[in-house]
Amino acid sequence: GAAELGPYRHYMQKEIFEQPRAIADTLEGVVGIAPELFDGVGDNGTVGASAHRVFSDIDKVLILACGTSYYSGCTAKYWLEGIAKIPTQVEIASEYRYRDSVPDPKTLVVTITQSGETADTLAALKHARSLGMEQTLTICNVATSAMVRECKLAYITRAGVEIGVASTKAFTTQLAGLFLLTLALAQAKGRLTDEDEARYLKEMRHLPVALQSVLALEPQIISWSEDFARKENALFLGRGLHYPIALEGALKLKEVTYIHAEAYAAGELKHGPLALVTSEMPVVTVAPNDALLEKLKSNLQEVRARGGVLYVLADGDTKIVGGEGLHVIRMPEHYGALSPLLHVVPLQLLAYHTACARGTDVDKPRNLAKSVTVE
Ligand code: G6P
Image (cartoon, rainbow, N blue to C red; front, side, top):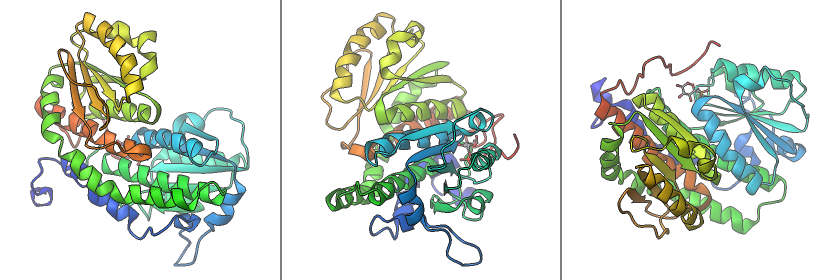
């Protein structure tokens, strides 16, 4: 009811603003990196499976998820390969369950699901198990869900109940859980020095404060949303760790504003989507470092020549300045490996405020459901 909403207009906005607390709660009690953080829940208070044994045994990761949870998995691939050096495959659950794939029993199967009840993700897990992959872990927001019961190991995110159909705080807490998983796997494989462990933990503990200062960008995002509310198409560009964030930004915009949005890896702009750019197609770019900006500057000429307008979410330490056809919002800091958790927030706010300007049913977008428990 209205009382629960407090100062917010919608649950989506409330949940976006709950992210600092959701992340703090998710990390509460994490005093050091240890596989035990992922130990099985067990029945009737008994101790579940041991993550330590499982982590030392596997040499691949297979992530299965749907929707926004799939994009958190896509982000985690960069961490798992970059930091833990573990080959990682990320698959859309509804694709994986029906295709012929090459199973490897030394795989850790990781499902990511806010609800723990998504039919395709549960079926994909069972499919993986039927192929002989017994080592299963879930990153899930509901401790009592079917998914937590089905998986050997679990990490319960503490986003709290998420009501808005478009997922926001569940996504960032999944990323926090996946980052911890990356570090725990790196440690189990002897690839995490004490120094790195201390540095990453410090960066994680800084997240709630960092998120707070990103949320303070809301007025700047509202001014962007006034432009977006009048468009029917938008293009999102990102690269590396932020390519999945561009995908998530486009998904958020589609879900709540009904604006057609798509995301591309920035280097692919000239291989197709540039042909679509007109004054009616704003181009959002996520986290360009200066190397990418150099490339963007030449793209910018081409975008400008077509009347296109760039909206750049720049790193804190980037030198780019706004101008004609180039809007820049600078992030408060440069966040390193955890940058995706921060960069997604302005995109959530952009979708939210654009939806408000268009008068859509933000918390219950047409045709969409919070939890898809049927195929
Ligand atoms: C639905 C929701 C999305 C969610 C997806 C996966 O499509 O509208 O917000 O990302 O399901 O849900 P899950 O509970 O498995 O994360």
